[in-house]
Length: 323
Image (cartoon, rainbow, N blue to C red):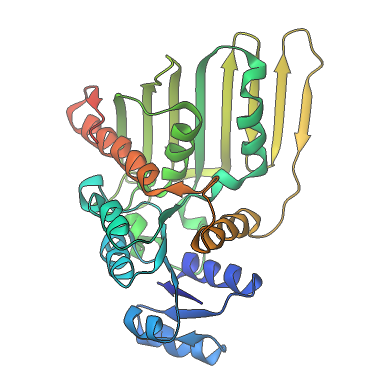
């Protein structure tokens, strides 16, 4: 049985995914009105993690607002629940640094919701990186329009709009996570953050960052909340060819020296990557071995890069990544 803490759009998606996998769900909404709404729809609700644990929950999904992530995860870990914590782990690495040790102390697992790791196209990219030779440059982009994310909610009232917990960099930490997963952890980061006042929010609307990977690859990343035509892409350049993956259209293009270009299109299915992530989390909770899912250490690494990026934006200098 699973408890889902936080039942907004992300939490509710986890509830749907768990139900599709025939896992009983107990929801812990943050608002009484939401609890009554979910109960009217037939969902089992509890008022606390303790109540859900007493009812039989053995795993937890934490999907509250970012400022609550560390505290809510800590409560679930202390209840000896295996935890899937939505990204980012906290607004900063400092606020989450105690969580991995707490999970180990209580003998439970802590994993981070980074479902792009389960994207089939990204999986093929990872498998076939060696086909383009020695890589020298990578460009990652994720650009979209924040008001379109959740049309039924005023985006200016969501956590994304708040300077101390939102912003496009924290929101799109997925891109940072898979960059580190594929190419390794940098020692230094140079980054810029901008709020052009287009959306009427406190947090940054644009994030542009650069670093050098451990193998000397030049990494460039561009994220924004302002682009009307969504774009999510990964371009990798090697001395024997190039790879380009379009996450939106789910198309991978591979160009290799002396070979016929390849184009692979991947089928689109609702919640597919979230289902695969949940399957692995459930497998681990039943004494399985992690494979693709992001670990607590992975989550801390991504936050450390974001912290250095935030610091660099303030100082306008290259900053050290501190772990």
